[in-house]
Image (tube, rainbow, N blue to C red; front, top):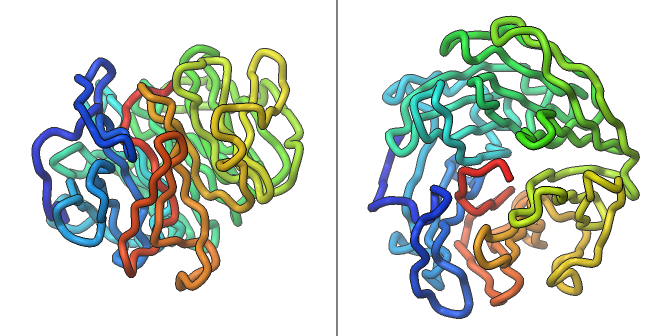
Length: 317
């Protein structure tokens, strides 16, 4: 249900105007979170020091019959990202939940564009929409990367599948025209073939991760050659041109930590955002606090169970 939306989400589009903000948090781009205690996707204003009240909350969403969805599989939301997609009518939320939900909703209206339920035992962890409207997804327990023909209708279930043990992340790369995916031990680039109605996935490149437990996969905004990679023990940048993994990046002394569930950088300022499990949270993978590095700050919502946090920004890279 669409609960609340205030104004225009700042910086959602490339070229959005910068606003003056406190030094503790760059505020031109909002922050989106997967909040598992209430099973919501929540967008916050990072310039507001306390996320405990309603003043910082910009948008709250979950799939319901009111906005055209079945809520089947909607537990432990695990991924969320903003994309501009002409096929789906403009800006959309692309989301996954570990209970077995994959979906695309219009933003900010929150209306259903596409969704599918998969077995919760597969544990979907990430979702991405390609420019043609098809949707890629990763499932950790299922050990797969899928590309759904979501361009063919809101109920489309036809898909291509690539086996990847521990599938945790997917990211479309318009520069290389490949779908990147990360699993337990590998980073792969997959070539998309076939047609929009009958897509195929073919392995184009495979790189061994330097440490085990691949988790998050995101663009390094400002450097189209680089990807953010997290594993159980490190936070890396990966160079697509050299194949090298590096921990020599700005703020690495603080941000290169174990068990980081999500990482990304502010598209204008370079400030980093991370979600890392916190002792005392209900599960071993959640936190009530999101960390920022470079204009260091913390944003806490007592009782929250954040799994991932990202800057709410539409660009692929």
